[in-house]
Length: 138
Image 1 (tube, rainbow, N blue to C red):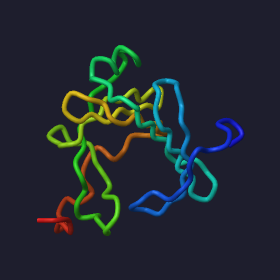
Image 2 (image 1 turned 90 degrees about the vertical axis):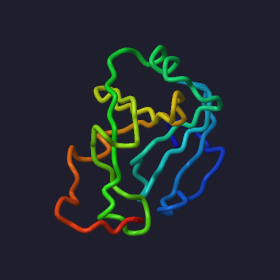
Image 3 (image 1 turned 120 degrees about the vertical axis):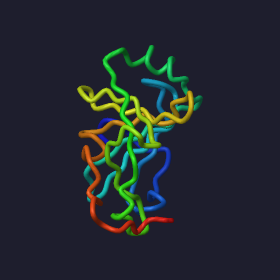
Image 4 (image 1 turned 45 degrees about the vertical axis):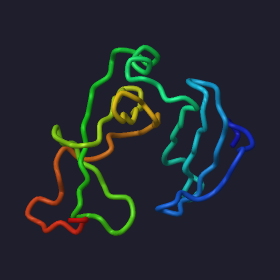
């Protein structure tokens, strides 16, 4: 709050009930910033642009030092909330990642709908479910 000021909204993340603070921002793109703060420590920051960016607009804005990473859900670890992800070249979740800068852009089709500020990759490089039965939806 010292850096961002008074939030425009507060609440709890829907699936985890973790507290967040919301802000309207103009940089790096106009949108709504959601700062997730369990135990009063920032753990996640999401920026939802007011207007979705095309993949090319995002690359033009953030630079060429990215990598495309695909993820899959580790379904055997599903406990009714957010399912952990793992890197999978065949995964259905695609991100443009600037790992050296802690940025990850969520891609849906040809558009970026979320810009995430992260401290590490979203998941391990392999499934932790190998040899386990899936608990996820069939």
